[in-house]
Image (cartoon, rainbow, N blue to C red; front, top):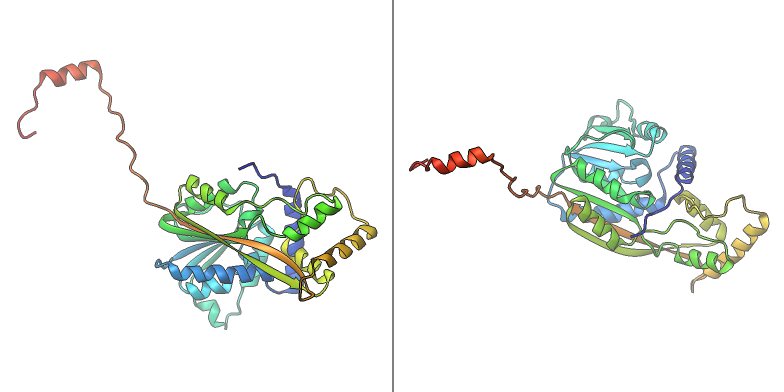
Length: 304
């Protein structure tokens, strides 16, 4: 797989915008993230293990808080956020008044930012909803998740796949506008990365979700709530009103038979376990020449 090239400054800017939007609305994260989290949580029914500690990656944006609390009500959680500002907002959103039953029930929750080290081999589940496609170095991130897990712990994640927004990609290509965003990684490549990181029994599957809107402005508002264009080859400057008019006209081509605008989102799901470390081959034993001669001269005693 070719190295992913992502404009990290653009990702940082988009995270700032999403954080401000979250603070202004005082609501949950993107609807799509919450829906994917719900579908991913259904796969937890296949897992017999009952984690006592969970690492939740990008919790405020992932829409998984209530799901994990209901599924594992007594488990402690380490919630990892993209940076210190997101961590501050995440702590604030999790505060409960002293009289709330939720404040005094359930496992402890610790919120940290992504730059902070995690306890090694201390958790039984790493949960990462709609995160991996935003990483410029997926193998490194998978390795970090592997190191956070105890033996027999498991990873569950979801991310966007290559067919995401294929209709919009085709529209941009036809108008000569360049990429709408970075290319997403195929789920089979993620499966290979899991093995390389040390995971065992990786399982990958995918589904395509089709979202519809009544008009182009609603569609664009939804996309802005999901992120933005972090491709280095994107248009370098501000767009003009004329460009926006062309975009709105082009989006009209995406109407389906029901008259609504349609966009596809390929969602990949993966899970894998951290196996018992393989016993390495016996270490080479070395003897000096004098020690070898001594062993030969002294026959082994019976019963020794």
